[in-house]
Amino acid sequence: MGADPLWRDQVTITGLPAPTPGLVPLSAVETIPHLELTDAPRVAIMGLHGGAGASTVAGLLGEGTLDTSCRWPQYVGWERPLPDIPVVVVTRTHHRGIEAADKFARAWAAGSLAPSRLVGLVVIDDGPRLLQDQQRAVRRLAQLTPSAWHLPWQDTWRIEPPTPQTFSTRLRRTLAAIEASISPSNGATK
Picture: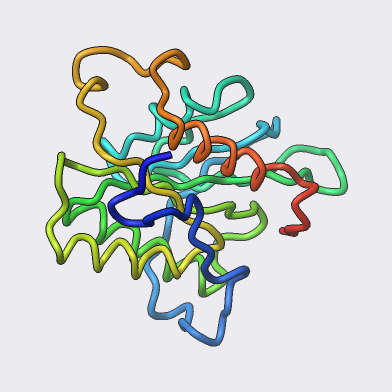
């Protein structure tokens, strides 16, 4: 497995395990739009801005994923207890993406996004090489969610869709780590 330019040999960066309402007051966060669901998907993929790559990540994770666009999923069906909806949020490494991820992380840390469960943040490069300021910002953001994963720039994805046959070892390990975090058996709670 080749070293990741940001994470080095790590596949997952671990950050805050749960919201910490005292850390960020609710009055200091912006509202995140919600999507009401009556059926619980295996995992919800939320783009933090247009063009974040949420549909790509949903496709990589396969069946049972729901791309919620830029809305936090909230179960409103009759099932009790409420089903666990694991959510993976996705952003790009450009200014707009970093800003959106920071806004989201503050809202999550303040406790304003219950009852679904944030699994972590997927950061997708916006170009073949990140600037030093981008690298610092992404490393900081990785500490603000339960888990963070990095998908480096993929030249081939510009001209053809990703397929399992073309996945690098690193991408396979990253997807396996995300899948393991999605599973309710990982010990996380809502």
